[in-house]
Image 1 (cartoon, chains in turn yellow, purple):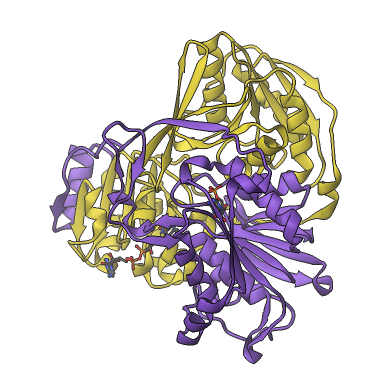
Image 2: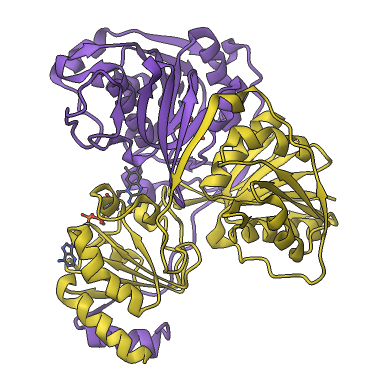
Length: 323
Length: 277
Ligand SMILES: Cc1cc2nc3c(=O)[nH]c(=O)nc-3n(C[C@H](O)[C@H](O)[C@H](O)COP(=O)(O)OP(=O)(O)OC[C@H]3O[C@@H](n4cnc5c(N)ncnc54)[C@H](O)[C@@H]3O)c2cc1C
Ligand SMILES: Nc1ncnc2c1ncn2[C@@H]1O[C@H](COP(=O)(O)O)[C@@H](O)[C@H]1O
């Protein structure tokens, strides 16, 4: 019997939807081992987020109110304290939040840290995890040698949990703190709001690469296609490094990992590190003037063309087809 | 300031698709692939050197020490970072199978206790295991503040604090941390204006990327000291917290790549064949 604690990610005073990937893992382990799962809503706005989190079938939802912007030092002692309450697994989604916070919690508890899993299996009371390594070129099966395992979940590989009907009991827990938090000051979070779907959740992603040549071309050439397709916009590292688009659009081994129904790579060569972030997509389209570009290794359709001609034309034709 | 930079040796990341799994699935083999410094660690070395120099005057402001855990021939990889400009090295001999993020963090803690650096600057992730954990674990063990995924670093208060811009998935989150601290770096930390130390003039333009070793640097690196120790000598708990019973190659993508010449053909196929439009 393994009880699981999900550490929720909060955003703008509510529950961030990506939390539901970790809830799916928690359900799987709880059901598979005959245990239960709880959700810890921690941060600013924990009560409001808890009301949302209570809809997913957790035994209970715990709240810990911590005002101000997030930094791991302020959260890790409380998460660790709660985790000591009989859990066998502590999990969160492997966003930059989960990746930042969970290893601190693991270290505090001397627990195994298992990052960015793509799947789990339960065999009797034992849980093993599969995680991509070497930029997704190897899958490693891993088990924890400690009683408690701290596990982050790759969002693109786990469906979002669906509402379970009913509501979990909500309980407040006390906040624990230690000296490290007093040595950090939250200065700011600058986000660019976009009307487009979230990259991690969109069913279509259109990404641009170095070949776009400028931020201006991202706006005037690529965006009309992105919007005609109702897609989220992504980018390669080269496009981000060159300053064409912000870093949070980067798709890849060290950026966001996406697995939409349709991924369109425009002027992207398909370096290993880029493929690591999108090769799980269902249908992959490349638009590239070089037939030999390595993106061909994963593409289903490859339009050999100059993007500056093809992309505007495609935006028009997609609009026509979609009506 | 005194900066400790952990550097892992990894097999050539640009050929990661050529790694193989042993027949019994018990290990990953990278025979025939070159060894390279983990790119993020190389970036951390670059950032450390920038923090510790007055660039136009070619003047050193502090000591930059590289440390690695691995086989004895990792000294060659360490020499590459010494040739870039790091001052000395510490190699802790260990078999890769004896290490996981927890053991690495414990071992780093013991070196930090001995060396007392102001800053541990490291890669956000080793691109072989892709764990992204050792830095955070180290910070917790030390009771230090941290800033992960750093895309820029500026020293302030005469070197008592760092302001760090973190590249997070909703934008840029800026923290101010009091030294000593752990900072893990992301790709953009080697942009021309990513690091400012208050000494190198703000208008100094660095090249994009990590610096190349000069011929002089390579000659000097041969004389720089690399202390050798054994993992067992650190007096730490070396118990692994994780076990990897099996490795496998991911299933290949099914289907082949269909080349098309016109937008009409592409849109038609996406609409009628793949049914994604
Ligand atoms: C540690 C590390 C981590 C990394 N992580 C990531 C990551 O997460 N994500 C990522 O994307 N990269 C990552 N990279 C970088 C990666 O190795 C590549 O350098 C990068 O993906 C290249 O971007 P690109 O395909 O846009 O540019 P290029 O490789 O320069 O490709 C441009 C492509 O555009 C085509 N092209 C040019 N002009 C036109 C035109 N007019 N019309 C049509 N096609 C045209 C060219 O044929 C070419 O194929 C990482 C690298 C390192 C070292
Ligand atoms: N064997 C090692 N030797 C030196 N540094 C390491 C080693 N393993 C991990 N590190 C450091 O820890 C960082 C994060 O590694 P990981 O948690 O394994 O992804 C790396 O970027 C390195 O700075």
